[in-house]
Amino acid sequence: MRRAAVHSLRNSASRRVPCHRSIHATKPSSASPDPPVQITTLPNGIRVATENTPGHFSSLGLYVDAGSRYETPATLGVSHFLDRMAFKTTKTRSEEDMAADIDGLGGQILCSSARESIMYQSSHFHEGTPLAMSLIADTVLDPAFLPEEIAAQREAARYELREVSSKPEMILPEVLHHVAYGGQGLGNSLLCPEDRIDQVDAPMMRKFMQTWYRPERMVIAGAGMEHDALVELTAKHFAHLKDADATKPRAEVRTSQQVPANLLQSSQQSSPSFLKSLTRSASSYLYNPQQDPASSVPSQSTYTGGHRFIHDPTTEFNHVYLAYEGVGIHDDDVYTVATMQVLLGGGGSFSAGGPGKGMYSRLYTHILNHFPQIDHCASFHHIYTDSSLFGLFASFIPSSGRQANNPAHILPHLVHQLSLLLYSNIPEQELSRAKNQLKSSLMMALESRAVEVEDLGRQVLVHNRKIPVSEMCDKIDAVDAMTVRRVAARLFGPRSAAKASVVVMGREDVGDYRGVLRKYG
Image (tube, rainbow, N blue to C red):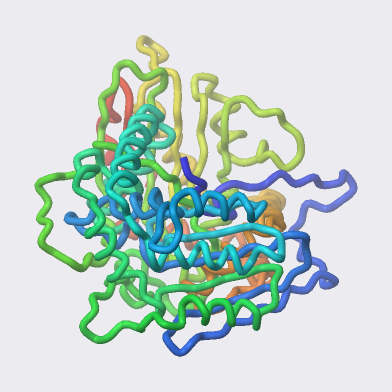
């Protein structure tokens, strides 16, 4: 499995707090100001962004506003194949030459496709930046797409699908997306559906790249290098690309004014930025071969909600997922939703313990510590430009009899945890702990040079600027108990008209989940 995007908001990172130190929210030290960011836009629209932070390594990446969200029924799976075909034979390098040059970098180079972006990224010694740029440009601009290499990746994709489909923790988030967004747009699978593997070919990949790999949809980001040098390298390799004309198709993505009615708020529009948390997985549950493949431009992604039961009597655990539509990345309330996710927290029934592991989060203290049959219970928050999924899941040992463990018995406990955000006051100490964990997770993730450059590239791609860490921390610090209650009511309160997405896998279905939601809502 390829590396997923940065998890700066989904899970809190380990953080040691001295005994004498207050738990109340703390701010980043003013002695460590945000590193300066420089952004240059070339005449054809491609943006170049750098953070010249010190270090032994440099990181460089190309980030494209493309991905599975932009696939139509006729092109499902093409993003996955572009990922797999990266850094293979090109028109100027054989596969052996490509491999030799990559080995010569002394670092690592990769491609990763997500729902809303495809990235090509390298971490290397400082002197390797020109070669890394050459390799990335070669694989993006001049791929050969040899038939024998495509055939090999088809077999690899089949194996990948079998592996993913056998792991509920990988497949169920994909099924949840499919249910939540009606199998289109954000509901498209991240991996090529099995029925589509033999359909994806070189002309389809070239057409997709011609449509979406345009300079105004690209960002070149670098960390640990001089800005002017990166601008010069970008111009050398990409300046010949032509920007889009009025006849080219464009993706239809909702703006902040097009948010569904149940998520509208009064006057809160700004541009916060967090990194997307995406799980790479897919299966045959997700593809509907009856869909009309005629459309060449994806429609906007609309949240629909719904329910899906996957009967599997052989599975060791039953699994229940519950999600609601959250706010998009351009909404100020994203900071509150992120804080709510850390507040709920959760994890596995076994933990090595220790400070900063989330053992005081609500899903540990309220669920895992009281129900030994539950093996794993956690909150999640998948963020996108115009939408998100916020919710909880639980994996538990099924049983029957008087103390039955089935989805109908477990779901009320999950819904009750959401209702507590609506109707009970959150102690200041608990809220401060969650905000500190969120901030430390964000800042500790950015200690990695690879994460730093990916964050820079994705932020510039979405916002056309880099949001300073200090600004994000200020937004997190501004979250209070009343804000949590307001945002919880906005997402899943009784007056929100929110639609739930419920996915169940195992021996039994969940039963009347709507009645449970009404009872606790």
